[in-house]
Image 1 (cartoon, helix red, strand yellow):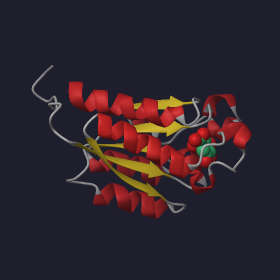
Image 2 (cartoon, helix red, strand yellow):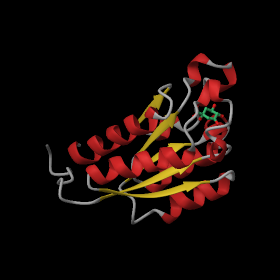
Image 3 (cartoon, protein in one colour):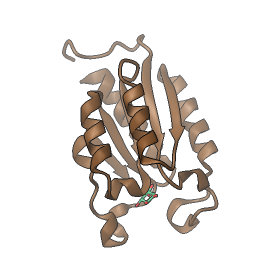
Length: 156
Ligand code: DQA
């Protein structure tokens, strides 16, 4: 551990962002995204966060600008962010720039394995602005991403 580490007794503040169409999880293309609703994923994340002394701020939006606004509004509050940018992953230089601008680390997550799908999903504009990526484990991707982020925040 170096002197940048966050002691376990400090509550971590983590922003969770869900991008476009993820409000339909549960019924949306279950062959790709599974049958777990967004509400259940959020409940899983809240439960896990409470075990690790972390507090979550959760937003789902179908609008690119609202996701960027949420990142800006988290400056000064968030220690880190977990983001599934949905299709904006593959299109948004603005989200890349926002992730770089806010100054707190982010982890990119995807339910599906974006590299095993159509070629247009193989490139992520936000990956280079994130500390890491979890892709392909269904709803569990979020938990793995949360663990990775918390470990990063507590240990690095
Ligand atoms: C997704 C993958 C994206 O390609 C897609 O546009 C989504 C969901 C995923 O979680 O697997 O909306 O981010």
